[in-house]
Image (cartoon, rainbow, N blue to C red; front, side, top):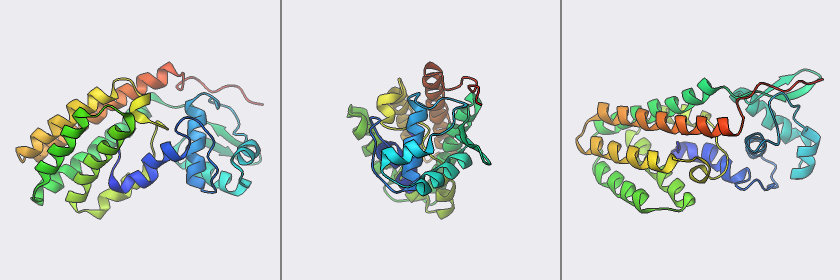
Length: 242
């Protein structure tokens, strides 16, 4: 599951704060409301082509329409909705290639961070990552797996010591709301294999290999998410609107 110390406050917190089990969370944060709307899209309550019911969302969350509008601006920037003047916001159909691109970008960013971390010869990096990877291998609870995944990626980003890496990570939101490892079939096995391969490359001080393994792992995660979205019909054509 893509996440880092820098991005977790925005990307991965969105899943939990936006309603891990679909429950409504009272909040005045535009970003957390955006997460709630992503959940409504994910669970099929909002389908492609539908108008976002801003008043109902504001009422259910106990907020005014202002943070809802702020959330929609965030969602439009991410490609989830299209805002039409005097008509409202409409749900966009998700695109399969865009999902692949999303996870490939994560792979490229973390792979770049791994190369930078090795170039800086960060003391004890391989041992810290190996310890996290061993804990991930032994874990079974989705929330614990999420925490360890975040710790692994965050350790690499921190070791890279390049603030510019955090900029694109903060701009990327989670595509799967809620508990990622509970929602995406096969994601646990993909990440177990991927983290082990990345650790082996780090232990050999091979930045190019670590980068390639990150890209491979995130590509496989993207494949799993695409299959999940297909099962949920999230790639279907937009519904007709008046």
